[in-house]
Amino acid sequence: MEGFDYLLLSSRWLHIAAAILAIGGAAFMRLVLIPAAKVSLSEGEHERLRETLRRRWAPLVHACIVILLLTGSLNFVLLALPPKIKPLPYHPIFGVKFLAALAVFFIASILAGKAPGFAAMRQQRAKWLTIILLLAGLIVLLSGVLGQVRTSGMAKPATPAVQPTSA
Ligand code: HEM
Image 1 (cartoon, rainbow, N blue to C red):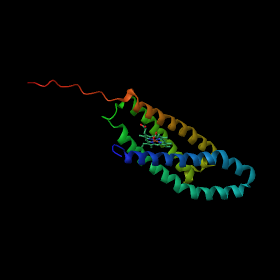
Image 2 (tube, rainbow, N blue to C red):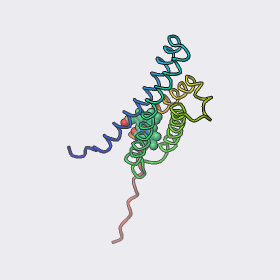
Image 3 (cartoon, rainbow, N blue to C red):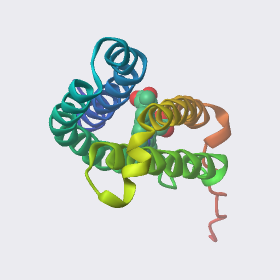
Image 4 (spheres, rainbow, N blue to C red):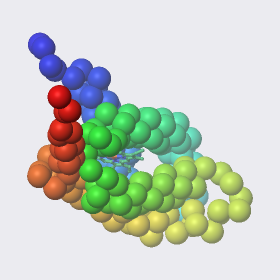
């Protein structure tokens, strides 16, 4: 198919697949697994389950973070570098999304890690998973806004003035 951008399609597919896996996993843990384990397991069993889950979940979280950073950067280069679009208001909105994504990556890495300095944060796992889910909601909203800003008249680059040619 002529004019069909396979690189952009693959990059967006991978980006969305990694977001679904990472955020879907966090939602499952916060809304289903933690409440179910609390009422049906003893503290010792719960602790063993937490450690087993952590070991299986950590490599997936790290892979999703790397994929989101690589495909997100590629999406940005392919879609949003001037002169393709005007920087305002796309780039500041992208900046807020990027900072929110970095906060999600930081919290997710702490929860999936073992660093003793962050043990207190891991003890409040449910609270931090809720924060991840709220930030993810904001990120997906901002991603939709970015798409609309880019495809609406707002981001159309200014057409260069035609230079008069001297005879
Ligand atoms: C938790 C992390 C993230 C989530 C949940 C997320 C989610 C999404 C979603 C749902 C879209 C819309 C896809 C589409 O319409 O095709 C998107 C687009 C995009 N994402 Fe992400 N993303 C995340 C992190 C990142 C990062 C770290 C970057 C940059 C390094 C990034 C850059 C982009 C760009 C440039 C677009 C295209 C926006 C447009 O249509 O103009 N994303 N993202």
